[in-house]
Amino acid sequence: MSFDTEEETLDTLMAARFRGYLPVVVDIECGGFNAKTDAILEISAVILGFDEKGILGIEQTFFQRVVPFQGANIEEAALKFTGIDPYHPLRIAKGEKEVFDDMYRMIRTAIKANHCKRAILVAHNAHFDHGFINAASDRHNIKRNPFHPFSSFDTATLSGLAYGQTVLARACEAANIEFSASEAHSAKYDAYKTAELFCGIVNKWQKLGGWPLK
Image (cartoon, rainbow, N blue to C red; front, side):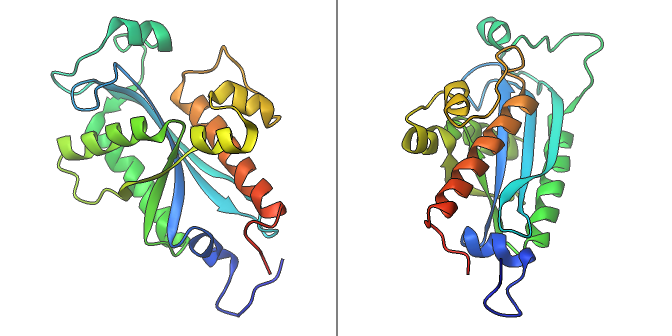
């Protein structure tokens, strides 16, 4: 690929492509559906980047098991669905504030490296994960939440448009992305697969001429 000016480089391509925002793929496994009252049990974030050919791909992954915040609600049905045991003696987990501080630090570094002004959340059924992100930030009075407060990219919607499928496993299948049902419902695995799906849609759209690279 080539660039229009000397100022336009691979480092600035992300900002140009997404209007100054860095897409960060997130998946959260939790103890229920209420972002304000239910525990976050696992969280993963995937940083994306363009290669020298202008192809979007995965660059860096963050994953951490989370100690439920004090007073958090955990529904038994949610634990059965995810298979997570938050009380397992060998479970390596960190406090919620420490996890978010570490994750946000990584995201801010990537924002700066890509000359972006802020991150934008990418998730499958993004409204759900976005609610938990904002609730945790408010809970710990984290002032520098790097994500846009309400805008996001929802891969359920995007894959419905691109492939006619809205369930993550089926969308990946339609996109020829390998998906293991036995590994699903882990934040690390689901975030990685969501990232592959999002990158595939962006790259396909680009190939079809939807966003021209000079």
